[in-house]
Length: 192
Image (cartoon, rainbow, N blue to C red; front, side, top):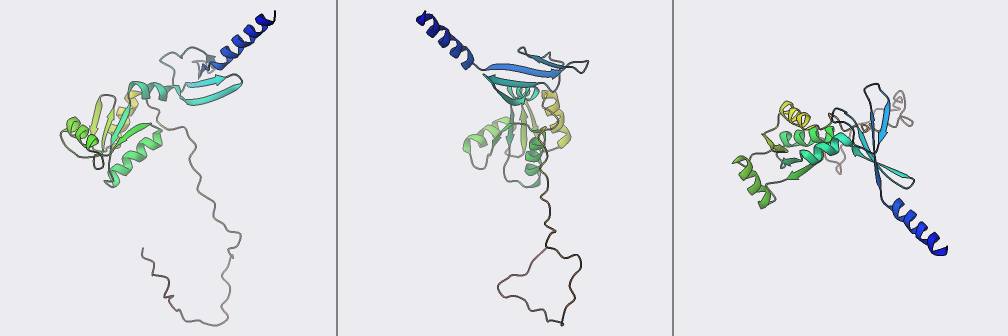
């Protein structure tokens, strides 16, 4: 009897150690559906959740995971200024995970970019097997949409910090006597 109890306890512990997957989505009637099977391909905004015993881990959305696995994104980029900054920002705004390659700092990345495009111009976006030379938000969004990447990250936008107005007087105090402006030698002038 004692051996049976030990065996039963060991099997129970082993079964709870394996994490299970749960999918959540809304069906065509607007009802929330939970299943251990992936949702139909027509479903958008499905979430995949992993749970272990009594802990539920909400991972990335199911659509994002599928797009990332089928159509990985690679961004060839340097510190080229506005186009490269806009390229990074677009991917960040959409929450697209990507692999950044810098041909200025890595000979391997430089060779890969040369082989891919025949040139060393950046930015270059690769979505699966599609490549786009240069930054043009319409083309980039179309390629990401075709691959199934969500249009936004779903993460809440960062709020601007509130200005501290507690110690700011509402009207300026009256000066007691006119004072001459004297520049401070320790503080350089501000340039705008």
